[in-house]
Image (cartoon, rainbow, N blue to C red; front, side, top):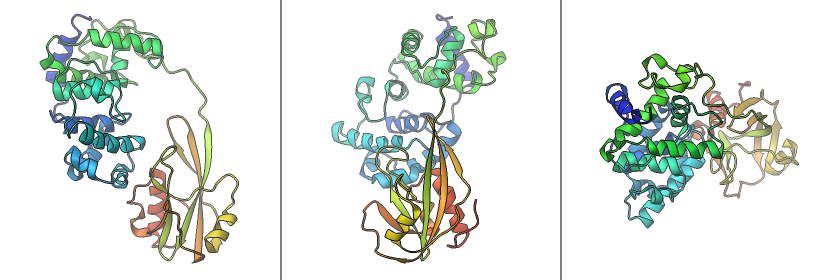
Length: 354
């Protein structure tokens, strides 16, 4: 199978692979942008965001000259916000260190913030036809099934063996690298899917160990189960004179760098906050909202606060009062966006719970 793998994959990709994605071009900027957006995110979700970014930032210099706030605002809702911050940093680095031109080799590309080994190889293969293997989640699934590789692919030993295998399977001609790289991505995303693989249509089924041994549900080996911790947060929906208070989150951590509703600290009560902010009323809390991250789940308690008078305008540069009508369009996390939209639908009056 190893000897025939590239040939079969290329034949299949030419006939059945995806050919109309907007980032299937040789422009390294567009390839890089799509690869960052596609990290842990499905193609269907990326398409709309990609179009918005290209319209606003048609090239790397335009992106580098933008503010990180604008980048985060356009990214809002796509999740994993460190990608947006790294995207902006990398654009600046390309302009300052590489003269606005993306380097061709993975060894240089990997220096860019947010670019790992697989992403660097993908950019190099798609934009410059370089012979370097990728190893994202889809590729790991294909290799584990076709070659019968047991063990969780996230384990270093298993991952290293997969890297060696992936490099050995590359086509001989560099000209085939864009099609080959797209093909192995497509195979994992469309046929060799996680839940119900379409083995009857797969070009590898005659030599696929998982198919021949009826082990497609076992491979790749699942990550060892680990209890997902739960965290709790109370977010204040502070309203005054048709405006809502938002605060800039710290640059690292949950929703790093985004605007969000003020969060009560562990040692502060809502009454403490109100006494410092002004005069008003703390209204009954809305029902809890659950938001799931990769490594934990967050239980949010939305707490409405109606302020009739402010003691002082917030002097903290991280805080700002925004008109409620447009607050949801700022760079805010998805659950906060839903809360703000619900507030806006009430025409500035604190509504009934979600």
